[in-house]
Structures are given as C-alpha cells and as structure tokens.
Image (cartoon, rainbow, N blue to C red):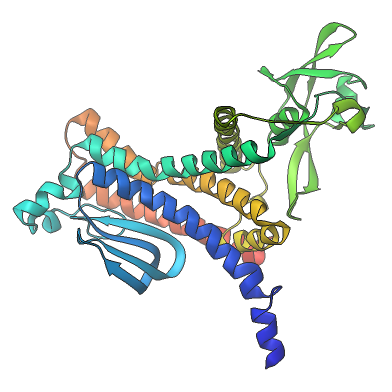
Length: 379
C-alpha cells in the first residue's frame, strides 16, 4: 500500500510529476482564453451568467456581485463563458430562450447585441491566447535573450538533398524560398515543415550570390522534451566554428517585438502543418491529445519552470489557432455565421444554423476521438 502511495504521490510520481504540471498548463491556457471572452463581453455590455474552468459537475464556485457564477468543474479539458440568453456552453442561439427573457435581460443578452459586439467577444478568446504567448516570449527574451548562430554551412551530409543540389561548406544562406534569413534557426524553421516541397535557396559564395533548389526529406529527430518528431531537412550542418553562436539581448520594447515575430512564425508553421495534414502529407502521429500534452508537461516540469511556461506559450497559440477554424461550435464557426449575417444584413436561419452546428459538433467530436486514439493506441 505504501509503495502504491509513493508511486502516486512522490516527487517523481504520476500525480506530482505529470498530472499537476498538466493541470497547470491546461488551466492557464483555458483561463486566459475564457477571460478574453469574459472581459470583452463585459466591455460590450453583455451579461455573463457563468465562467467555468472545466466541464461537467461543479466542484467549487461562488457568485460575484454581478450574478456571474465562477466555478471549477470536474472535467478539466476546457472551459466556457455562458452569456445571458445562451442555451448552452457553446453560445448556441435559441429563439424560445431569448423570448423568455425579461426586457432588462434582453438588453444584455448575447444574441440581441449588434453583430460587431458578438464577433469581437468571440474573437477575443483566441486573441488572448496569442497575447499570452507573446507575453511569455517577451519575458523570456527580456530575461534570457536569444541565441543566434550565423546561417553558414559547415558540413554537407553525403547523399542528402543539399549534396544533390550543390551546397558546399562555407556557403551562407541569404534567403529560403524568398524569405530572408538572419540565423541558422531561421533556415531550420523554414525548412522543417516543408518536407517534399522543392525550395529555392539563395546562397552567398565567394562574394557572389547563387541560387539552388533542394527538396527537404523527412528525418526523425528528438526534441528537447524527448519526443520523437519528424521534420524536413536538407542535410547541412552548422557548427559553433561556422555559426559563431552568441546571445542577443533585448530592451523591453525589443523583447515584445521579437515575441510578436516568434508568435507569428509559430502561427504560420502551424497553419502549414494543418494544410499539409488535411491533404495527407503529414504524419498523423504528430497530432496528440490530453495524454500527449500531459506527458510533455511532465517532461517540461522536470527540466524547470521556464520550460513549463514555454509549453504554456506553445499550447496557447495552438489552442488559439484551432479555435479560429471555421467549424461550429468553435469560435471560428461563430465568426463565420456573424460574417454571413453582416453580409446578408440578417442572421442565418435558425434551422440552417442548427444543421451546421450538428455537423460541426460531429467533426469536433471526431477530431477529439482521433487524437485520443493517437494518444492511446495509434502511435
């Protein structure tokens, strides 16, 4: 019995080593997302009946002076803000529900607001996720700076795409597929998600610029958290002698600017991955759900709190992007309806909206089932 408790409660245990870091990461990301909806909704004059971290039965909670129920619920895989007039946690409109409201309630009900207020409230969730990522990166850059290595080729792996394209040691990358590069990390970022795509490289060699084309190939690598990932590579090596790595420091404003750039890079790479995944050009094992996130949180916590915070930033931007997909009941699905309403001058019919919501819910549940299967059996 004592061995079992030690395994569950010890410093290296499932509870302390994995579950607690997982709940920390997920709770921060969900809280910030829902707080975006809440704060902008309140600013727009919309009434809020509930703010929940988690779904299902309430574990604990309280009512504030505005009548909002703040609560922690049993299933910690998300959260929601329920506005006045919502029929459920997904802000699905319901004519009968709105008709049953008093005159005062209708003034602050979500679905009686102008379309711009509803759209602003909905987009605030993903926007706050992006702001959280920017804030984390800004602090990290301000405190630790950023390691930069010159984009110079030290070695070319035999029989690699780079060797076939004519790369030589000493070549310096100028641009990758039209995007200028300043560091070797820039090259890796632009190449890693483009396996199988011919890329045009501009290189500086002996005082001249030359152009070559190479197609990255897939290679398995182990990341800092010990996860085996598949990335695109062309087969060049950068060493300390060629790259001259150094730490670049930033002023507070410079750290924010760099954080915005870094967040933008992640958004672009995530978008590329999703597009390639949909057409079958990415490995399904690269997608994971709660089990994989919990495993990563545990590994990050062992490396230190700053690693755990970086995981929060990466998960936050991923949640923001996923929520903007134009699929009901995700935020992007709501925004799609509001866009149509703005163009047509009237809301989409309740019957059509209900049909689309059902299809969207099926897709979302199917995706959740897919990542759960990946977590447990697929990879």
